[in-house]
Length: 215
Image (cartoon, helix red, strand yellow):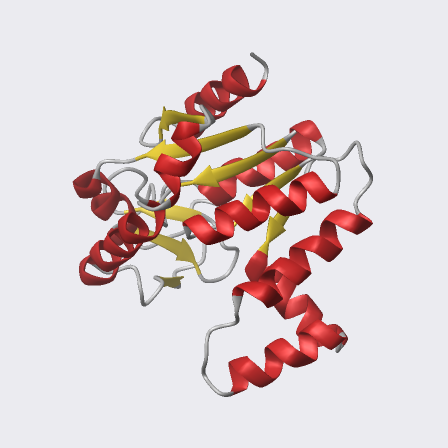
């Protein structure tokens, strides 16, 4: 089973991807993680990528394709993949089809977590975590039982991500729409796209995805 999870930052892709990895035994292929690993390992592709990134330039499609090609070659044939951060353009989508075919695979499903922008802004801008134990909270949806005290460890120190502000969230949404617009029609033409309500509870989203994958 080879799938693509789509959705803007904050839609819950990471949470669902991790659950799918555990539940179905498939591999999450994150282009960002693969690039960092290749650079750290000093592989030929990693060295090439590092030189480009050190110049402040974007890594080319050829390099990303080489990383995915190598990962697919190393994976057992009966292990599926979740593609994370790739493809972002129609050219990349077509290249992914070619890479999958090269390794005797095909894309089975493209799942988009649909969100309401206003609700997503509220979800992201209100979240904060305990600086001590990492327990997550939300100003409105999950406040601490005692104001300023972590329910889990009793710490009084909390932190918020600096990019969890309205301007940044709305910019992320705009970028997501511009990036996914070219690839959704491509996959819709192949009948691969399904959509689930990303604003539902984590459990309900998981159940919706399972229903699609088990159909």
